[in-house]
Length: 457
Image (cartoon, rainbow, N blue to C red; front, side, top):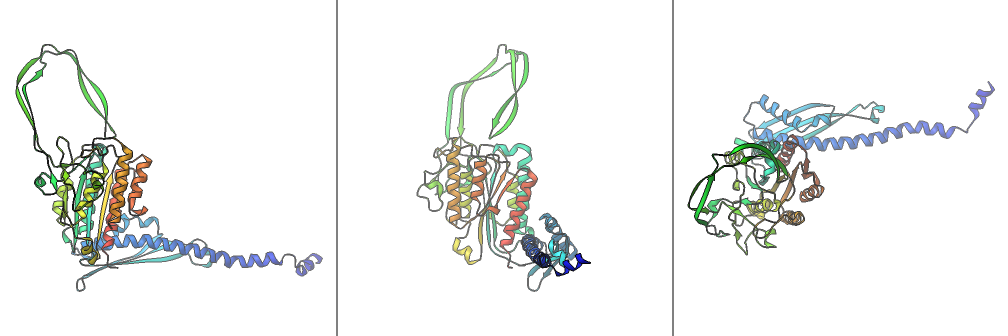
C-alpha cells in the first residue's frame, strides 16, 4: 500500500506520461502527412496513365463500349499503375458523340501507413482526362539510329515495332483527328535527303565520278589446293562481327580475264555538313548543303505527313549500316520541323502556337559518336568533337522551342549517357534502357506524353 500511495502522489513521471499520451496524435498527424504525399505522387502517376489511355480511347472511339473498356484497361496496365495502387476500383471511359469529347475517369486505392492507426486503411486517388476531337496540333520528327550496330540483337526490329506503335498512338491510326504530322530521319554517319532532291536550290551535288581503266584484270583460282576457312573477328560501329576467310596452301595457276572497264559513282542522296557554325543552324542557308559522293547512308528522310501507311512503310524499310554521327540526325530532324527550306511541310512556330501546338524530336541511338565532321564529310573519329557538336545542336533546337526526348539503348559510355540526358528537354524525357523490351516501353511512354500534349483537360 505504501508503494501505491507514493506512485499516486509522485510527480516525477508526469512529463513522460503526458508525452506518451500526446505522442499518439502527433504520430498519426505525421503519418497522415506522409500518406498524403504518397497519395499526391500516386495521383501524378495515375493522371499520366489516364491521359494516355484517354487519347488511345479517343482514337478507337468507333469500337463497341466493351472493346473501348478493354482497350483503356489494357493501356493503363501497360503504364504499370498496378505497382503504385493496391487496387483499381473504377475505370470509366465515355464517348459523347454529340460534343465530340472522350473522357476517362480512373480511381484507385493506396494502402496507408500510420494513418491506419486512426482507422484509415486506404486512400482513394482519382484521375480524370478529357480529349476533344481534333485536340491540339503536333509535329514530331523521329530521329532514328540506323547504324551498323543496330543490326545486332534484334535492335532494329524492336525499333521498327516501337516506332510503329508510337505512330499509331500519336496520330490515332485510321481515326486521326486534327493537325498531327510525323516525319522520320534515319541516320548513321550521314543522312539521306533523297535523290529526288538533286536539283533542289538549297543543295549542291558533285557530278558523277567516272573511274576508267584501260586494262583491268579479274582472277579466279580453279586449281587451288589445301584450302580451309578461318573465322576472323572485326569490329564495326562498336559491334564485333565474325566472318570467314579462305586460306590455301597453294592457289595454283589462276585464270585471268582482262579488258577495259569503267566505274561510275552517282550521288546516292547522302549529305554532309556545312562549315561551322552553319552546321548548328537551319533555315535560309547562307551556304548550300553539300551532297557527298562515294559514301553510304540509310534510307531517305520521310517529310512530315499524317499518312500512317506512308510512315509505316518508311519504318518497315529501315536498314542498318554505317558508323554513328548523331549531329547529322539531329540537324535534319530540326530541318523537318522548320517551315523554311530544305523541307517546307512544317508550320511556323507562330502558326503552331496559335493552334496550341507543339514541335518535338524523338532521338534514339544505341552508341557513341564514332565519327566527327571533317567538312563536308564526316571522316574524322574525334568523339569529343562529335559530342560537343551534339550538345550544341541540342541547345539550339531547345532554344527554338522544340521539345526533345532521348532514348539511349545499351549505351555504356557514361559521357555519352550524360550527353543524351542533357540533350533532353527535361530529365524525365531522357530514357536510358538496356534491352529491346525496355526501349519499346520507353517509346510507349513517349507516345503517351505526346498524346497527352493534345489533351484538352
